[in-house]
Length: 372
Image 1 (cartoon, rainbow, N blue to C red):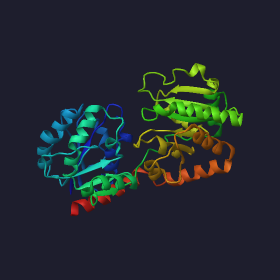
Image 2: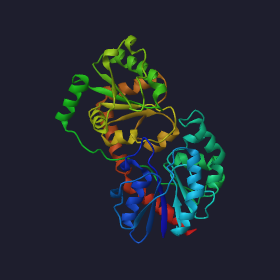
Image 3: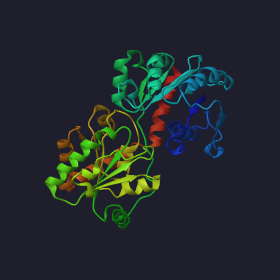
Image 4: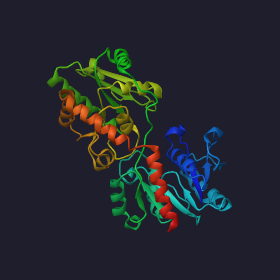
């Protein structure tokens, strides 16, 4: 069988270690050498990425910089090459598909945030999805989803996809480095003068809940009278601090803002945290939560069906009000048993959420799709 795969590196995710299609299909190719894989790149690539003899890389221009170029790439450049390589199946990148190819197709949906109002997509992207998504799913033989919640939602909205939807799980990279007790103490001494701290990730998706988090931290400090700190990690694509009025915040001396400069800095500040808080306002997939659990750090996260389907009992869920967030912070702070229990549940979940398991589930479902 010959499977063609689109490997697309977006502007903010050029690291092959976190590229879903690249990671999964490199594992599949290594496991099943009797099958052939065509990796279609739309940007120049390093040949060192190709580690298996049964993977043939192909650079297919133009580089996809916007939806118009993506439409042209999928519908006018791709079909002829799928025929040239006698592809039995094409796996797209995200919410894409070729309307002009008769080759069986698979799409992989990490989340369904593009269907919701107020998502993080640009207005042009939102219009594109609204216009073409039903047409895309009419062409596919298989839809891979990260969790059961996604499958239920998609099947309800588009009943015609019910037999096409398969849950394959999700994955995140293991930490590149583990830190011992002394190293963690050194990290705390550099960032919080040796004090324990809650770590919170401020991303585009969680930015709007920062004020609620600060109010919750105020409640926590008033009730516990502890020297616990709050470290806010601002991701580098955000140009300036989201906290314009921090100077008037009562506990401003206990709040540290950190613009993560690189992965190493983010890894160490995560590894030494007492607990992590992540409050995305949207139901969407990223690797922040699972990466936190892989560092053996308990996680407080937004309460919604999407997250509950991902993390099951490995996270503590909070509604978006300061009282509930503060209560969850106090629960971890006052009860060491609860904290250790959450760390253990996180370990159990992350032993399943591996690239190998996800690739295996993806391959199993693809086989079913191609045999129909």
